[in-house]
Length: 562
Ligand code: NOJ
Image (cartoon, rainbow, N blue to C red; front, side, top):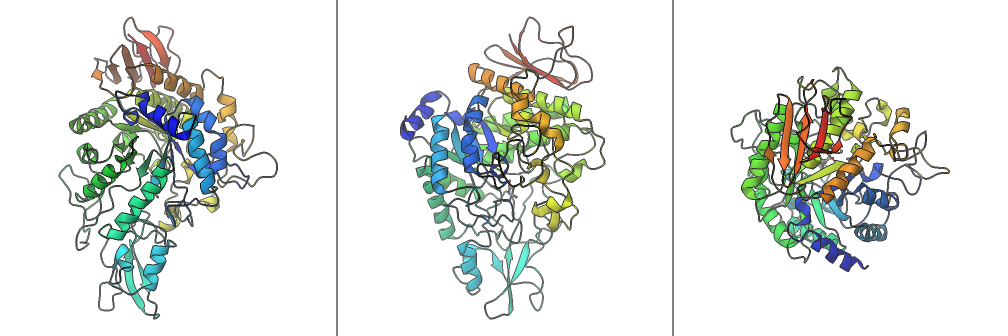
């Protein structure tokens, strides 16, 4: 079958409801997924070799983290050329072959678009450094004179997401201390100015470039950050996320004007016969603000991070789901559920901690809290069934299907996340959720790299992962991998699942129960006591064994046919 005919088949499969409204998307963090050439870093060859695994798992699409040329100051989110492939990952020909092979297996491909900033090695920034203040080359970025009599102070009080000031001063070509440029992330990631027409046109060109190569859509990095307030006013006491439910006028997050950009992108994506799609990474104040990105002439989907951050408690989880469903309903968009990604602590390790102490998001949030990994894994498995039963689409971060925990004891000398250095070595950052996947065997690299002489994986894998490999879980009915496989297979079969709505059912305190029509019920037991299964229901799948009386134990979820 040709790639074009596969595209045609993929697009007609869900004729009533477009595929993206129900899609289960698997996040491939490429440098940690599979290494084809033995240098210890995952790559396109490795991904190609594992596509059959993803097809058998039953996902509808993959989202691949940035694979473009990059100096890797922020693991590829510092892009120096959006229309090429980082040599460590392969070539453009490899990428094209991968896209075609994925389509051949019925898997769509989403890439990561990083429009807020580029690498300081991008030709635009190099041109801007060589150009004079006020030049068109500098207008692509946010260069400003400093404050104070000698311009020694940054133009405003904005801070980098990774710690420290969001401004760096440059040396002008004549050797004098010069202007400052804005970087909301590392100094090697200068922010673009989206008022600049050449910036706008170039990103459209990049999208066309990849769409022409069959890419089905983009995840949009920092989608809430592209527009900065006129005059770049100080932050003052404004914090993000806001500590109030009142509307907040933040000078660089979630500004209304950002929506104009997405309206243009939507019309571009809609020009394709099989329209291409977007998923926004937008950390905004609340579900209503998120839904604004999903109005019918804007983006298709956006990650629901409230669900990810909700503690493992029936009331909190339910409130997060209710709020999200109603906000999405207002704009007719499907919610997109997610339990983890390459920026957050893995769910097994979050749920292994007490759930009422404080929000658990970054590695440092875990510190000093008591831990029970057995409970963490039970909850993560139950959460997976909950997520996959909810209306809309879902994202699975690679390794979640293996029940991988965060690696919490990485030695300091291997840490690569810029958070570590930029925080003055106080925050360890995100490396613990980025450790390479264990595929097979009893010892590192667990099949991550090919046999024979291979470099060690770029982050060390724990000894304890021998029992978590794909190989050791395959065929083990009680394994997390088989739980995911079963859940995805049932999800594909049952018309009740995916896009649509739910009905809440009465349930005891600490228990969540809802129905999806036709004939499906999901029950999740957050309480310490066993919870009854629905009367007269047939068990389809549970995240753990039922009690002798056929009840759901604590931290267990069940799918039932009624
Ligand atoms: C969000 C990405 O997911 C994260 O990994 C990255 O560091 C920042 N955006 C900056 O691009």
